[in-house]
Length: 421
Image (cartoon, rainbow, N blue to C red; front, side):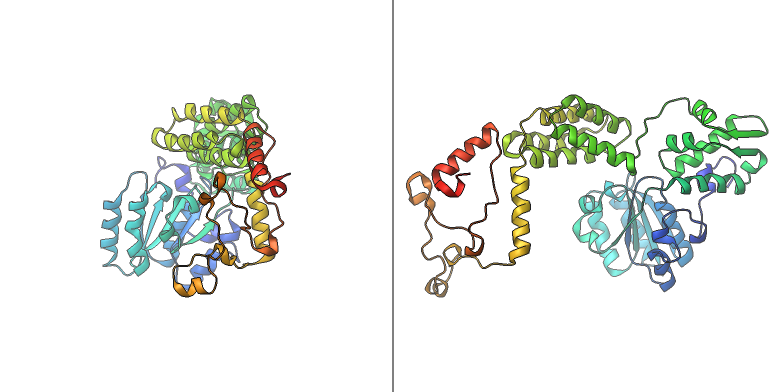
């Protein structure tokens, strides 16, 4: 490597002993360290925010296991590249295929990996900033372990800076004093790659032999005020919490502000759209059924459009949901029902509700006395649909809003006291 190679690349460790952070995975008792010690590495997916060591860990595993290492990015590669790697791997003893941003592969691209992973032709290591449960197809996910990488702690980031200053042969040519770290850590957003490259930028910007790293110097060199938004750390969760609570609290003004904070911070468009989709059902529900329809359409639209225009769609959905009447009746109902299932176990389905496809089933009472609703006036017949052990429990209570008051009135008319509330 030469001086033109970015500092983050020059400082990339090749062994777990030199890796900073993620002690739960690579520390003395870390699972990845134990796996390497066994001499047999399974396919796995590294899930975590940007710049916390996913690519580095993949390279270290290959290096320490002495396995052939092939790295591709899901942004630029496709099925053709994947199949070429798999064909070549058939003639090698052990190959690790590292796919950065594997969540960007579509289903057919991910499916192309299944056979090779299943047969052990390749050991797959995927890296993703997105929840694999949503972004990786089930068949592939079931063949991989998932390891979660955490946001780097402040001390980890300071250690990275000190390590680079002490050990990089090019930085050693200057007398560098690290007196303040708040600005360089905040501007890098907890991303180790950005942190080190910003350090190099600051050092190179000063022609003096002695460079004093201060908050002012870092801010001046960066030449712009960067929104404090870390897609994987505490700030991420604080802002999405403020966003959700603003929509739930029917304040579109505040909601659109927190939306802007996420957009300016580079938050993934699908993450925001997914949260709006959940909000539409959890906090609005049947008080305005159109909310779920708009949120679903919005989710589909932003995936097709992408930034920057997707921000307009997100704003439309956000303000609509925030200005809608609210109800969590459906949310409360399913939580109560799930709790009842846990407490009462697998209660038998009442005989009159069971299907009776055979004569024997009919003979022993399956389907007997079931009343077909459409044979009765108002398409309703009074009968019990719950197991008798929990027949008195009320799970669903319509909210106090115009639409659900209509539902309450209709149910009360049919069921009398059962839905009398």
